[in-house]
Length: 182
Image (cartoon, rainbow, N blue to C red; front, side, top):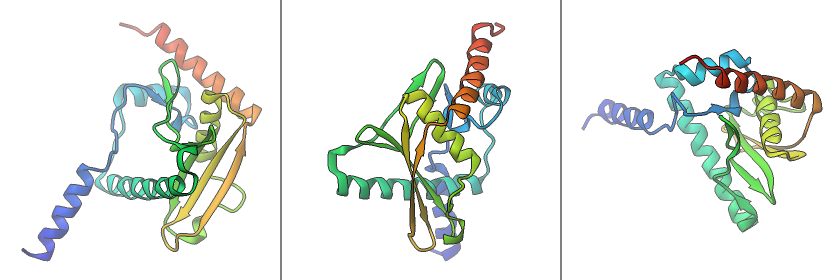
């Protein structure tokens, strides 16, 4: 077998096992940074993806699984997985809970991309979304660098301004589905 064939087979397998969902039967709180209209559009039409996106997704999930494995080794049954928060058609799936506190894992390519104090807004919105749906006051966010394995851990607290903005967006979404044509 030729190296190029092995490479192509690996890429094909990875793309087809990336767990990248192009369509969901719910609105994901992970995208709450977007306007309500965009969230409804994604729900109706799904996501567009590329092979590169699916490869990155596979790698991200791989690192997430490894982080959760390590957390379980350290904290045992204090770590819960398969968490789902739901309010109507909107759902959120944090990666874990530690002692009932929602937690999420993120990975970055290089050490220099690890956030220092200011988090990417998309991620901050996502964590605020988990806090909104769960009605918890704080969450844990873990970043890991693919370059060195360096870690950053943040405690994120509920931000009333963001909570109000999320409520406004979700109210628009719920109203749309109550009065949805057809």
